[in-house]
Length: 217
Image (cartoon, rainbow, N blue to C red; front, side, top):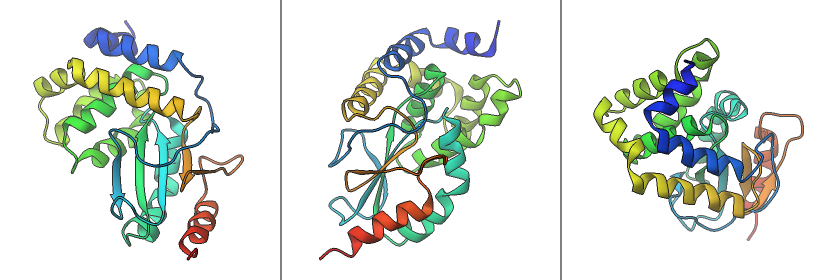
């Protein structure tokens, strides 16, 4: 039995729900569409709601392009704009294959608590190479969840909770209704920033868009 099959068996309902979400859209590369305002379940860092500039990232913990952006661009972006409260950075969840793993990862991050949410998200992204090396994704998710203070029983309950599954599906549907068809996708005050051929929007392109908005009266 493969690692993915074993994981699906652990939470069959979560797998089926995530698969249904994934079937609603083809997620590959950067997609088009719009994203503005606030959405139910937004997780944010930096400036408070109502900030002059809001940067929204749609991403998945199983998306290799998202993980690459997280590794190469996030540190500089965070230092320049998030830590300085120049922007409100909003992360929105859009599961990509294997969708059951992505949905479970998002739910574990939320169950860990708002203060540990991004630690879990970034921890799972940073561990993607483990799966390519043959590690069962279930082991990765449990290890990262344990590191955030959740025991195995709490993690099992988290990813099987009907309310969590329903909320996860609703967030994914909202992302697709916004016209987002790929991850990672970045929006600055509702306008998408695309860097062709790159792993998500580059720091240079994001800075150009952000600084232009900050300069407005």
